[in-house]
Length: 158
Image 1 (cartoon, rainbow, N blue to C red):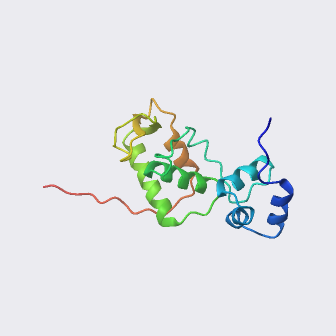
Image 2: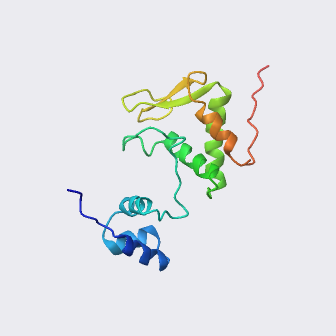
Image 3: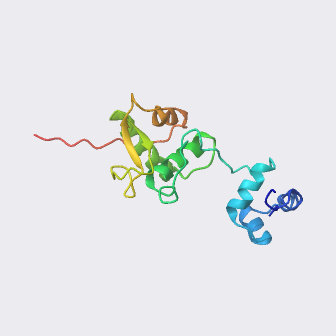
């Protein structure tokens, strides 16, 4: 027997027509924000600010790792690659992070059991040689609009 419907299509369509945000809809209907987002997708009523990050974050992340630095950077860059509005300083930081890894010949991978901390204090994210990886970071960087970046400082040692 299917689970009872928490949010009806009619309710969603009515609230969308009123110009309500997902947060306002969740509060009015007494459900969580994620319930609204999932239900909109199920009914084909995605909001214009819904982005699909699955191309660049294809793993099922644990809650512990879903808010880590690498996850945040991947989401920011994915959103920008899909035409979303991302604050320039945040995007710049994410691009510098990814560019540094790519220039050093690295890609990233995710394993919820991985305990190394080179990418995240919480583990999960690991560096892999780019030739073993998917080229995910390199591909993502190629999709991004150009953002003015500071040149890295070079340290001279005499």
